Amino acid sequence: MYKLVKSLFFVATIVVLVFTGKIAKATDFENWTFVGGKTKIMNMEFSFHSANFFNGESNYFLNHTQLSLDFPSKGSIYFGIGYKQEYVEFPGRIDWRREYRPMLHLFYEKNWGYINFRDRHRLEFRFMDGELINRYRNQVQLAFTKFRGITPYFSTEFSFYFNKLDYTRQRTILGAEIPIKSINLNLFVGHQINEDLPEVWNNKIMMGTGLSYSF
Image (cartoon, rainbow, N blue to C red; front, side, top):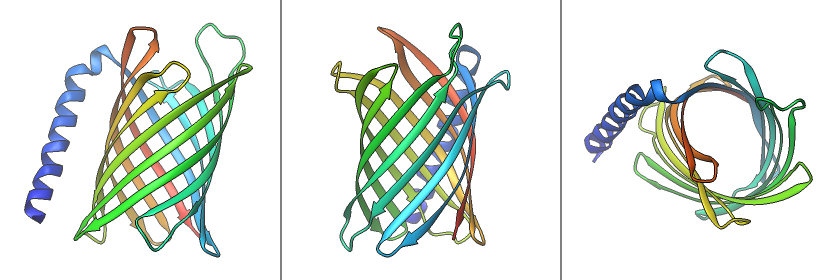
């Protein structure tokens, strides 16, 4: 079973690298950086991070800050609440678009040996430019937890707008988390396809790093 899982992770790595290598010239490239922390408050888990996004020309164009409060249970299902505030620069727009986003989360998590499966459901209430846009996001993640020094993972997520009843984005990420004392280092590469305009789909390649401090 473990040999099969390691083989699947290896194949997934090759597929992502080959796929991104073939389409990189025809797509956008972005670098994402995350810095944050997490702690326990009684029976709750509080986490936060700040993220900065850079395009292929190393131009800074997006920042968001996110807060989450989760309520783990002894079972496989638990829920949480969150809030994200985002600022985005668009070409041709004078000011940065501001977005205020309360969120509700529902998690299903299960372990089979060294395999961790997580299914996250997220409902977002996006307030921007005087408009409310409701979006549903579903992320499925598989992590291989056998090794003490590294945890490789694979995740895929789709987004769905309730306002238009429309599927608008698919994001796939291959990465690894590396614990260093109280710090968790996250390294990943990903691909995203999204509908920026009606019937106009664009590809995007992402490489990213994340640092999270446990206190």
